[in-house]
Amino acid sequence: MDLNKLTIKQAHQGLKKKEFSAVELTESVLNRIRKRNPEINAYLTITDELALSQARRVDKRITNKEEIGVLEGIPVAIKDIILVDGIRATAGSKILDNYIAPYDATAIKKLKKAGAVIVGKTNQDEFGMGASGENSAFGSTKNPHDLERVTGGSSSGSAAAVADNQAIYALGSDTGGSSRQPASFCGIVGLKPTYGRISRYGLIAFASSLDTIGILAKTSEDIEIVFNAIKGKDEKDATSVNTDDEIRNSKFEIRNLQIGVPKEYFIEGINPQVEKIVRKAIGQYEEMGAKIIEVSLPHAEYALACYYIIQPAEASTNLSRYDGIKYGLSEKGKDLLEGYLKTKQKGFGHEVRRRIMIGTYVLSSGYYDAYYLKAQKIRTLIKQDFDKVFEKVDVLMTPTAPTPAFKIGEKATDPVSMYLSDIYTASLNLAGLPGVSIPIGKIGKLPVGLQIIGQQFDDEKILKIAKLYENSIL
Ligand code: GLN
Image 1: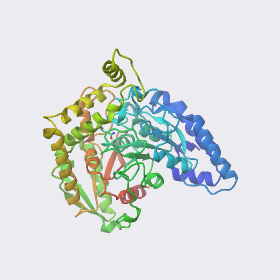
Image 2: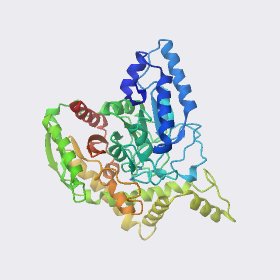
Image 3: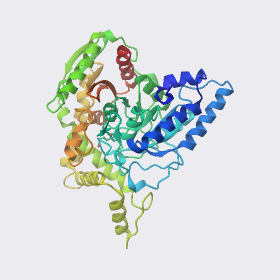
Image 4: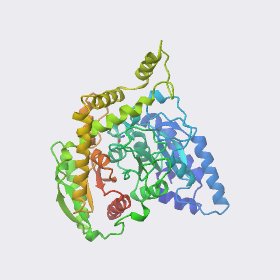
């Protein structure tokens, strides 16, 4: 049996029944990483010692006949933008090449408490800026379904690790689609939670009003298990919330479910086979008894432009901290300014520099009103569009991305066509809503994802709806 191919649920049952030990499970994942990482490039750091010591601890508890939790002894990969105490955290950037995290992110603290086994830190687009993985300072990650293609991004390594059985599940981040889009390109499940439901403490900041920690796994059931372990209010993140007692409608019946399909999402430019597969999956929900309703999100066409103003604006301020003094790379100059310039020039890649320049421009006096302020107003209109449709429907269903995985290099010199990859995902970050991408079919060998969008705090509900599809195809 290839233990590394198991889901969380299956691995947990195997551990409980003593069919294998946590060390055996961990070794099987580590062996797969050793074999495949030189080609796939999913991992930047492999933490085998940490993993094996965590696994041994779990085995001891099993030998002592203690009851083990569902995540205990299960190997997980962590995106390099999330801090794990004592382990290098580069966020995919040369500027943090030598940075060792001095503490655990809250999500990591919770995973450790739940007995997780951390096998390594995964590759990603630099600071989360990208939709292909090609903007990593440490080389592209290859899509396990077709090695000439991208994994999507920015959580490129996390998605490839799970899809290639180099981890049982992974944490990613999602600021504009970075967990959902690579999940869809790699044929796995990816969750972007409601803003605030998972603490951002210890997630290296990219665009703080949009940033979330995402979860990538083989099934929605596994995502639910991880979400339950890491969600919740955290004193260290003032924007985090506890909503367990507010969860609406997590009890529902499929025959009462109203699914909205936004007409603006099926636009020119969408790959016709993606559209066909997505409509077929929505049709399956209809067969299960749900009602499908066409809805309109009139400001959807502005979402991408709005995202590509607010996000670089926030990034330009967040990234000003990398000055060669407080963290990471430090280049000396004849004075302070020259030191700053040299450090940033050497440490930041092209895409990061582009976003810092765009962000600085849209915030500069004279342009602030025309760009940043206007984008904030449009952000409100986008949120209101969603509020309005959710008066009529329970959830929305859309493609996750307009195309399947593209070829490595295909869009690398055309940033605007790369940005178009985020067209269906970025609006959820602008509105703070939860979304999950589930695999629903393939074009040749390339997976296609369906995005299920919920109302604020309906994370549990969209996962239940995702599970219905999973169970219906078993
Ligand atoms: N593709 C988006 C971007 O480049 C996704 C970012 C993200 O979610 N981290 O901004």
